[in-house]
Length: 293
Image (cartoon, rainbow, N blue to C red; front, top):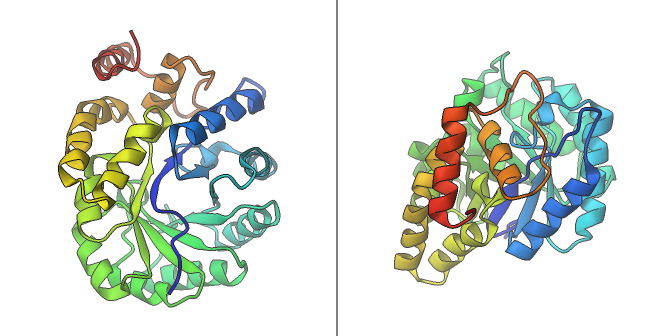
């Protein structure tokens, strides 16, 4: 039986940028905040980390830095997806070479492969590396769904061990088809508990950037049998989550990280700063949650 890469909460970490590159000192502080806060894994250079705006050299340098900074304390999972299969293979090989513990690979966007194309895409990527691969199904961003039957076929590839699933409607089918040794992680902060109740192993979380302890505890309380406690935490986070997704991710979460006192910088174009009205909403919900005064 394949072991999950992690159980609990993996933070989809923001990447702190300056006008000229990556702020590695700020990145170190964010990594330490996550480890001290109880995150069970770090996803580096994912959607929330703005990997789509990072040149390959910078992309791999950030993964390497995270691996070295974490120093095996928790798993580091590198986002290496692309809509160009050859590009995804090269990024995946380089991330493995610098020490990533696993890879997160998103469904190809824009060119919209068939289900056969998706199967071949992910299979060939996995065949070029030894580390575990987590599929990432996020139809709202890619306009494409990775169907349960395709996930089942991919689960038979030895090192494809999990899916980050944003289509809650098909989670039960994926569990029934793939069995207990294939891990499913929530890709949406507002439906962590429903996914866990269907057999999920945890969440790859945006909100964990600012509430790592509560995100970790939500999952662990569920697994420890404290369902009421887990539900209480999920419900407690909902208004904060609405503020964190008032505009496209990661615009609000970067603003929230800055409000906590970290130097996350701004998002790279074409993403822009959070609007004043939504910034005030974010402040309001962070105050209500007890994160800021």
